View 1 (cartoon, rainbow, N blue to C red):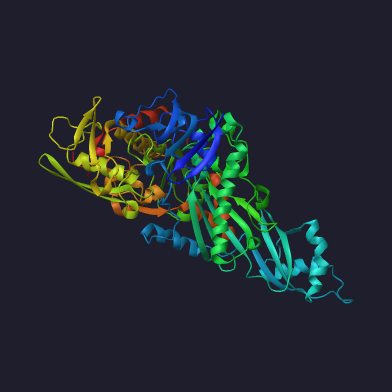
View 2: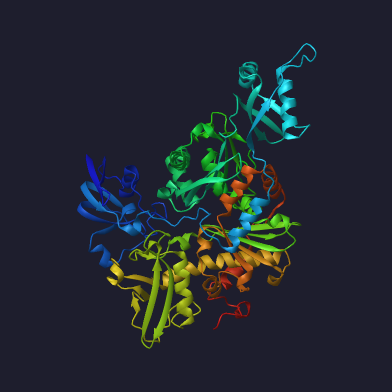
Length: 637
């Protein structure tokens, strides 16, 4: 029997078979419903409300509160369609109005560091258009067309030993193109490892028609910059959430989904569609053509690069945890489906290992760690936490599974940084009551709490002695916002109706334990890397905090809960989306790409997966701020 499922408030309807999983029905309809765990029934984020009709409930490890269940709320992933139904997708389960860091939108000290480094790179795009005047052959100088073209190119570029290759198709066009306008010709050349390919031949001056695309394929977001390869200027930028999110918050969950459903092709198609959607928007807005795009440079973690290129990702989650390739040569962009010139080259930036991807190698060049005497520490906090320590003499790295708690996973009222998410909080205690001031993304009514807000809340509650070092609430104090439910204490941040809040927004001891595990993994990774290199924390002169999440974190709060080391705040620089910055630097500078490739070869990777010392440090860090108080002298206990 076929059933009609209508999703409100979007008004989207889809027809599915009786017994279809409701989350799958939403995916088929193109309706996003938050699903951190990929449909395993453990995260509780795919809450939707049945307005009409019935569903069959499957067993689940996550128990909805009775107050929600009585109002018709169910977990979409654990509900089977039984007849025609109408479903309401709450705003906190939807994905819209996200705060995605595209760069170019702040003027922080860290962002200015990246901008300065980009300006100082020699301008030599990976693909460029060169206008030439090629003299006709004569009886006195009977030199073949290709040899004359090659000589003219080397002279124009002032590189007498520059190696070239030309394909059969270009060779067949060469004679005619040279004579169409008496030797006035524009040649598109692209770097292909140790040689340069003649990619296109056009009569006359077509230098202005050369565009490049820099892409950051993140686990959560996709960011695209359109760049003029004539002068290196960014013409525009667009971003969106990665459509793969519908199949799991982290890439391991997505790999499992793809394995179980033979859906690796689908995973690739989703990313390519996302990129093309953003490129389409930019081309329409800027009145440019797809065939002007001659180069695409992509950064992303190792798994996202495998999905993008359609490489076998099975072994990324199985021993011995090896990718198909860390360093991938240029390929045709059209081969993977990216809209561009027919011979445009796609350059995947190189990775180091399964858990240290091209987003990190590109980021290191963006902040110039490989060119400075200063000993620096680079942290990118996402689903994974990547840490790099080094300078121009050496670079060492490690990765830890921070988990998606900072994006709301495992937190009952947690959510991504979308409109309505509480992003910063101030709490003042007045006797038995607390005054709470919050700000939300987009100044919308509060729907939940995103990562930066969660860190603020835990830090403030700790300072007020409402929260103990263990992450449990102090049950001996009187506070009108404290409550206990099923022997789990919690704290109400927003009461239903305040500022039009649709429901109470709370944080409880289980939520806090999940956040503390995530921050402990990051801090333990930093400690282990320092220990392995026999370096004291004091030796680090500069801390770079990268990524969208890091850009909005309050430093004092992050130190208070023990996520970041207790160092002077002026040593910490928020450097934004360094993955897109690294991709763009490579796009407009061969030297940058060579540096990124060199970093991928020379960086030492320290595996924490089976490291007992890491587990010991992780356990110690599961307190506020840490079991060893002396490591956080600025935090008042």
